[in-house]
Image 1 (cartoon, rainbow, N blue to C red):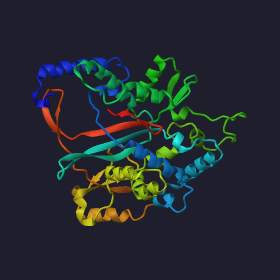
Image 2 (tube, helix red, strand yellow):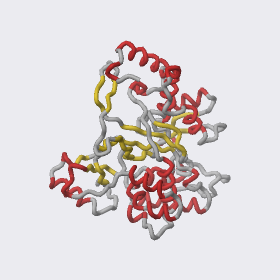
Image 3 (cartoon, one colour):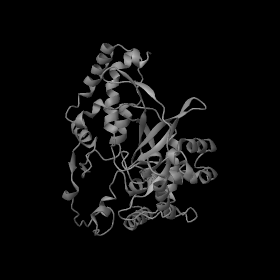
Image 4 (spheres, helix red, strand yellow):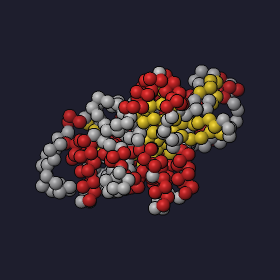
Length: 377
């Protein structure tokens, strides 16, 4: 192995072209040339994370002592949807969450530990709103690395494992309709093309094209719902439990709070709980240490809306903290969680020009129904 800055520019270009040639097998699917802008990173401890969240969501409405709905309130309409899903669960109309966690894509940062001189993984969020969120990029990207196997390069993820994980979530004998709204997405078009090559009938549709019609033999045993989304919620890959609870940035704090209970009830081992406590940074902030913390919107994605403490005045910081005393969601008001700002390490990264530049690394990984399927891209 050689340091990035010592690699000959011509060799670097040759390797890059060989990798890109593999990716271009899917020319019509990659959105805006996105195959050219990402790379994979490692992550650990997924088993402890999914076991913890699986148990918490399973007790969300039934564990009066935990008071989850009080600690992480939803909007009234959302609470109705969650309570209705609980009723569906009691009537066996939907599966327990442990059987249908959907598609997760947790993101993590690499923190520099100055005292020990090592890197720590820090889960910064769990993306669970959308299915196929980067999965196709990862699968096709890792497949392209096969061109370097003879040089001893080891794949960070197995493309077959990822694709089998995706295809195992629906009946391939029946048509697949993917509801896609305003979100541009990066994988949905690629997945449709991939399915069509396998002879699977798949197509993108818009929410406006959906209709609910009465059906005497409907499998759910209910009459026609007054709200379309309630009917659809029975068929989501990522249902409302994943979208409203797992994805919420407050869930990490709930996990930390429940660690002792999870160990006592043998959901997690003591070692797993300790690892999880290290993986998830604490979210409490002394007022005088604002520069070491950030405010992160509880429902955001893609880094939208994050406010850094060192960019706010002391008065603005205190005002933001005061707003957080009321945990109830309100229209037009953004609710934040307070997070420790991760001191990220710098790594020498060789860019397309062949130049070595110090950069931070942001990693991600993919899981399907609780099963780790590979590092992300």
